Image 1 (cartoon, one colour):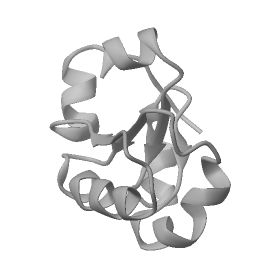
Image 2: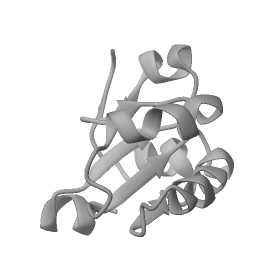
Image 3: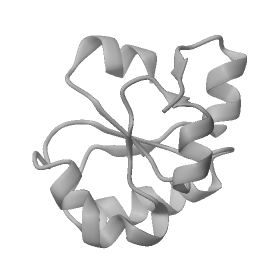
Image 4: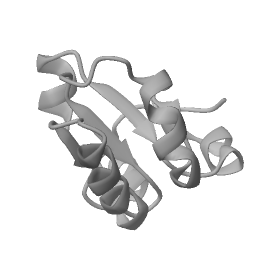
Length: 97
């Protein structure tokens, strides 16, 4: 994930609920809750060719989000393995809303 973010113009999308997102999220991530992903992802991320990094708390919702994103045409969608929990354990940057 870090190599993707540092190497290319990657867009991070947090698929958790707004309250979870506000408590802490990947720096620069947009918040599009999983239950609104199909309707709102197109507006949040207009360029379908950019690498899309999907994040949730532990990885489960993000995996479902990857399937949805790919169906919508985001070929480079992938989930952060282990979610925000693993991200924090790796001491990667997190911000609060």
